[in-house]
Length: 336
Image (cartoon, rainbow, N blue to C red):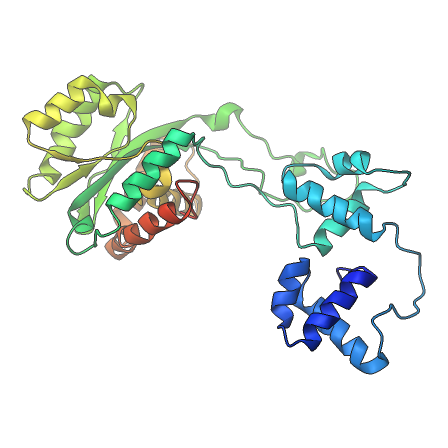
């Protein structure tokens, strides 16, 4: 339970008596609503907001320590508990776990950080501008004509640190408890694909380093152009070097392909990124895991063909929300 100083309790009590809601008071003091509720129940029962007599060890931190710890970690979200212990002013004997407990009371818990692209000021400005330009686009009149394309790399074995092993004490290095991982995940395969509300492309295996010449001859000419035969079709691609090279640009111009402008460092705006995640999950859920690159490519192609078209339409229908989100975030990272 988060604690309030005696002065803060008096202020909270005054606000409660003035008719302010418990949730608003809790947000002001950065505590849970149940803390304010218990404070009000205690005052009604005893006429006081002082702590009731209790057994147990005295609290190791003062109210000032609690505020210092909370502010340090709000100012630097990647600060470790041990670092804030060393930064505490005055004499003290606090452990790292005590700091973690105080952070938990303040609603701050250690979580895996979101991995996002590095966004400069110019990137944010371009993303906001792009979002504003497409705020009025609708799925029915605009987004349904767009073919979203991208490449993605799939590892044969992926180890993200989330696997767990149940073992006894001193079994850390037991053969059946060690997660053996090949170097660099055992390699992988790169594929290209494109999606639209009405369909999808074939999944193209991209071998080796992709260049503008290979991008044109192995992807655009045989696979993308047939999808863009409709005069209303719009082609989306990111700003990778092979995509923006003069050779690629000239090829698309010569074939009268309408290319959709795309802001740099914006994978969160492309719905196909979510489809890559779904494709990877489907492959990982197979009863027999791919044993080599050939098996992995075959599994990817089979799962790509079985993804319901309704799921793809649902992803593309999120484009208006993505535009609103990037504008609301002022060009910064979005939940997508």
